[in-house]
Image (tube, rainbow, N blue to C red; front, side, top):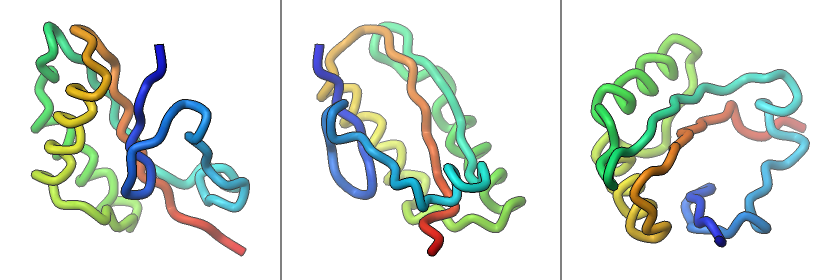
Length: 99
Protein backbone atom coordinates (compact mmCIF):
# COMPACT_ATOMS: atom_id res chain seq x y z
CA UNK A 1 0.00 0.00 0.00
CA UNK A 2 1.24 3.46 -0.90
CA UNK A 3 1.31 5.76 2.12
CA UNK A 4 1.02 9.55 1.94
CA UNK A 5 3.20 11.82 4.09
CA UNK A 6 3.17 15.57 4.74
CA UNK A 7 6.61 17.05 4.02
CA UNK A 8 7.49 20.73 3.76
CA UNK A 9 3.96 21.85 2.99
CA UNK A 10 2.84 19.15 0.57
CA UNK A 11 1.65 15.55 0.48
CA UNK A 12 4.19 13.08 -0.92
CA UNK A 13 4.46 9.33 -1.48
CA UNK A 14 6.99 7.03 0.20
CA UNK A 15 9.28 7.38 -2.82
CA UNK A 16 9.18 11.20 -2.62
CA UNK A 17 9.75 11.33 1.15
CA UNK A 18 13.31 12.65 1.40
CA UNK A 19 15.16 14.81 3.90
CA UNK A 20 18.31 16.46 2.48
CA UNK A 21 21.69 15.38 3.82
CA UNK A 22 22.27 19.07 4.72
CA UNK A 23 19.34 19.09 7.17
CA UNK A 24 20.44 19.68 10.76
CA UNK A 25 18.51 16.60 11.88
CA UNK A 26 20.85 14.53 9.71
CA UNK A 27 24.06 16.47 10.37
CA UNK A 28 23.67 16.97 14.13
CA UNK A 29 20.50 15.18 15.18
CA UNK A 30 18.92 18.60 15.82
CA UNK A 31 15.17 18.29 15.67
CA UNK A 32 12.12 17.30 17.67
CA UNK A 33 9.46 14.68 17.22
CA UNK A 34 6.37 13.27 18.81
CA UNK A 35 4.81 9.91 18.11
CA UNK A 36 1.18 8.89 18.45
CA UNK A 37 -1.17 6.26 17.18
CA UNK A 38 -4.76 5.96 16.15
CA UNK A 39 -7.46 3.58 17.28
CA UNK A 40 -10.37 3.10 14.87
CA UNK A 41 -9.21 6.18 12.88
CA UNK A 42 -9.15 8.38 16.02
CA UNK A 43 -5.78 9.88 17.03
CA UNK A 44 -5.12 9.09 20.70
CA UNK A 45 -4.71 12.29 22.77
CA UNK A 46 -3.71 14.30 19.73
CA UNK A 47 -3.93 17.67 21.51
CA UNK A 48 -1.52 16.47 24.21
CA UNK A 49 0.94 15.24 21.56
CA UNK A 50 0.80 18.48 19.59
CA UNK A 51 1.24 20.55 22.77
CA UNK A 52 4.26 18.47 23.75
CA UNK A 53 5.74 19.04 20.28
CA UNK A 54 5.45 22.81 20.82
CA UNK A 55 6.98 22.63 24.31
CA UNK A 56 9.93 20.65 22.94
CA UNK A 57 10.37 23.16 20.11
CA UNK A 58 10.40 26.06 22.55
CA UNK A 59 13.04 24.39 24.73
CA UNK A 60 15.34 23.85 21.73
CA UNK A 61 14.56 27.16 20.05
CA UNK A 62 13.05 25.54 16.95
CA UNK A 63 10.26 27.42 15.22
CA UNK A 64 7.29 25.32 14.16
CA UNK A 65 5.96 26.84 10.92
CA UNK A 66 2.36 25.80 11.62
CA UNK A 67 -0.16 26.57 14.36
CA UNK A 68 -1.48 23.79 16.56
CA UNK A 69 -4.85 23.70 14.79
CA UNK A 70 -3.10 23.51 11.39
CA UNK A 71 -1.12 20.49 12.56
CA UNK A 72 -4.31 18.85 13.80
CA UNK A 73 -5.89 19.39 10.36
CA UNK A 74 -2.81 17.94 8.63
CA UNK A 75 -3.06 14.82 10.81
CA UNK A 76 -6.78 14.53 10.07
CA UNK A 77 -6.19 14.86 6.32
CA UNK A 78 -3.44 12.25 6.50
CA UNK A 79 -5.86 9.87 8.18
CA UNK A 80 -8.35 10.39 5.34
CA UNK A 81 -5.70 9.99 2.63
CA UNK A 82 -4.26 6.80 4.11
CA UNK A 83 -7.66 5.36 5.11
CA UNK A 84 -6.49 2.74 7.60
CA UNK A 85 -8.16 2.13 10.97
CA UNK A 86 -4.93 2.03 12.98
CA UNK A 87 -1.85 4.07 12.13
CA UNK A 88 1.23 5.31 13.90
CA UNK A 89 2.03 8.97 13.28
CA UNK A 90 5.41 10.62 13.74
CA UNK A 91 5.47 14.41 13.75
CA UNK A 92 8.99 15.63 13.05
CA UNK A 93 10.30 19.21 13.01
CA UNK A 94 13.95 19.66 12.13
CA UNK A 95 16.36 22.52 12.63
CA UNK A 96 16.32 23.12 8.88
CA UNK A 97 19.08 23.05 6.31
CA UNK A 98 22.65 24.13 7.00
CA UNK A 99 25.39 24.96 4.45
